[in-house]
Length: 401
Image: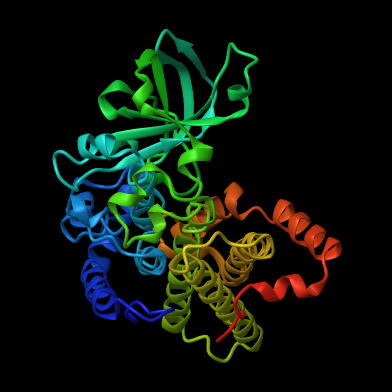
C-alpha cells in the first residue's frame, strides 16, 4: 500500500505516520468488513482503533487534544481506509469531519463539548421530517431526521433544521442544532444495499427542548471567520467557508473504494489465469485508465481546496462549479470502471461474501449521494461557462502542477 501522498508541501512526517497507522489496520478492517456489513454497524474494535490511532481526531483542534490536520490529510486517510472498508472510511472522513462544525462554535460551547477529551464523535442529520419551533427563550425539536451516519457510536448530534411556525426572515435560515446523543432516539431504518456498516439510521426527537446557546445559524458558522476560529488560528478548516470542503471529503471514500474493488477483481482474475482473454484485457485497461483519470482529478481538486484554505480565502465561483463538476465526475469514472469489471467476471463476484461485490455495492450507494450528483453539477458548470468568459477560469490554480 502506498503511503499517503502529499498534494502540497508541509506535514509530510505526520502524513507518513498516519499512513503507516492505517496500513497496519487495513487487514483488520478488511477481515471485519463482511460482519460489519451484515450487522449494519462498525464493530467496537474498529471504533476503538479509529480513536486510538487518532484517525477520528484528525480535524479535532489541538487545543483539545486532537491532531488538527488539514483537508488533504483527511481525504487521503479515507482513501486508504476505503481500499479495505468503505464504511470505515466514511466514519473516518465524513463523520469524523463533522468536528469542524464544533470547532467553529463559541469558546464556551467548545469547552463543554471537549470537556472529557478529544474522543468525541459527531453524528449529523440533515433531512428534516420533523418540526423545529421557538419555545420561549429556546427551541423545541420534534419528529424524525433522516440518515444519521455513525449514530450508534456518537457522543453528540448536530441536526440541520428550518424554523417553522413563523413568517420572520429567520424562517429562510438553516440552523445547526447541537444536542447530546442521549437526547436522541434511534430508529431501526437503515436497511440498504450498500454502505450498511455506516449505520445511517433515522433519529427521532420527542419534543426536546434546546436552549438558545446550542442553536446556530448556518450562514454565520459555516461562513468565513466564525466565532470559534480565533481559538485555533493555525487551522484554516475552522476559519474559511466550510461547505466546499465538507461536501468534498466524500471523494476519499469513493476513490479508495473503487481502487479496492479493482484490486480484488484483478486478484480474482489472476487466480483464474485469464491473461489470454483479449476482451477481458481490454476491459481491464479501460477501467484502469478511468481510475487513473479519477486520481488526477482527485489530486487537482484536493490541491485547489487546500491552496485556497492556506491562503484563507473563499473559493471563487469558477472554482466552486469546477469542484462540483470534478467530484461528480470522479464518482462517475469510478462507477463506470468497476461496473465494467464486475460485468466481466461472471457469477463468482455475485456472492455477498466476495469483497469486490461489497465494494461494488458500497460504491453505488456513495455515488448516489447528493454531493456527487452529476446533473446538478453539470448544469451549474455549463451555465457558468456560457455566462462568463474563459478568463474567469484562470482565477484558480492550474489543474496539474
